[in-house]
Length: 232
Length: 301
Ligand SMILES: Nc1ncnc2c1ncn2[C@@H]1O[C@H](COP(=O)(O)OP(=O)(O)OP(=O)(O)O)[C@@H](O)[C@H]1O
Ligand SMILES: [Mg+2]
Image (cartoon, rainbow over all chains, first blue to last red; front, side):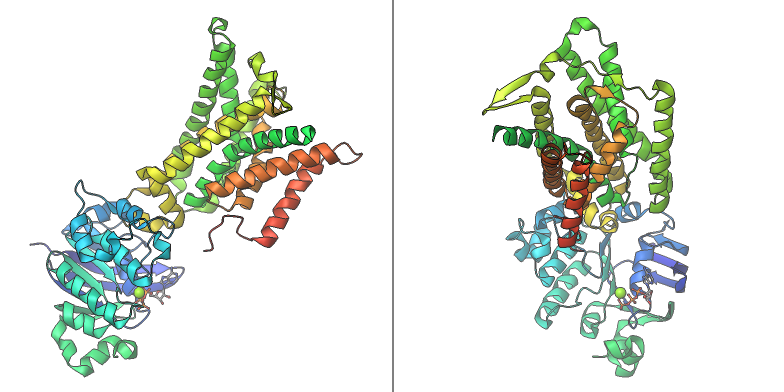
């Protein structure tokens, strides 16, 4: 089977700064691959380049299809759900409208989404801007799951959530990962250990390590991969 | 008191026309970051399309039917001009908002020049049913029927536009795109289609505004530079209302129409005060921006 994502020699330059300096990585189908690295090394930029949100050079294949230079909506329609770092729910739209906007298939998986996030069902008419941070994260993940797409790019889902919510979220993502391939950016080591089978570590815009997730059980390795910020 | 009421109604009619012109501008800016200086051109072309249709329609159709035909022509003419502008001129410049703004200015200047060449600077006279110029008495006031038509036109469009933006998928795409265009495409939606659509809708409303302005406020005359003078007020309305907000445009359009009408009537006859109506609008703009820098309904980004 082709890989979910094949990236070779990806370069991104924004406003004169060379942010990605030749990123190469493979994400095989199935399970969770975690993209790790200290703050500001280019994890978010890597996801945005995969989706064609920022211009890049190199090659990007999504399930074998060369997509570099494609407009974002066409890449997404190959079957890629995206949960951005800052959730990016549409604040002026209701929960229902946020979800409706994400519909791309004739039979969106509302039952599945509402069974993962029962809280959303009661809040369909609420403006997304008035939801709590955790609820907004649910909307953002729900949008990415609605079409049952095979691939998911999820950027720091636990950011800013209380510990109890983080473990609830990890449980949801564990269920999601049984159906889809996930490329997960995450700083919370416990979440990474629980979900990921593989890790890819970025530093200064390049991949510096690729390996199995259980290497993180060694605290020295964990510290090296994640820097001070992630070693908590 | 009756004078005041009459002024209020004609101010509302003027506001309705400003709303038609401004709401499209506001949507285009909100979604695409383009200050569309060609919007005045769409108004002018709408008015010319109406004039063309009305002068070519067989007289046997009767004045009311011919007027409806010219209304339709204004709407279609504005929509067509705007749609072509988006596809042919704006689209090749996606991602370059400064160039897009400059090209709308160029287009407006060039097309206005062409119209002046074709028709001269003398205005064309638009055939309008006599009924439009007759006054109706209502609640002790007396106004030309055209004012009521303008008011009704603005109201119908406001309701239709709100319905479209709230209830239809494309309306939701447009509202979401005003907030965060990138995220809309990251949900698999081709935003470029929404771009063309806001131009077409904006152009249709501009065409209608161009026709109604000619009928209500410039003595049924159509001229090549008419849209440009309306455009200035439309921009002011958009800024007062808050960029990207339709309700903001509606409220601001009423405020501007009323302020302009009142000051023109009460102060405009004094020596040296002929421009007081326009000046008062600029003052209103300054006061609102001092109080709310993002306009009345502008989002606090
Ligand atoms: N639009 C932009 N303009 C200028 N610099 C940018 C832009 N986007 C990202 N950068 C820079 O690129 C670098 C990588 O940013 P990126 O957001 O990809 O990091 P990250 O690994 O996701 O960090 P974090 O863990 O803090 O989310 C940073 O130094 C950032 O300042
Ligand atoms: Mg990031």
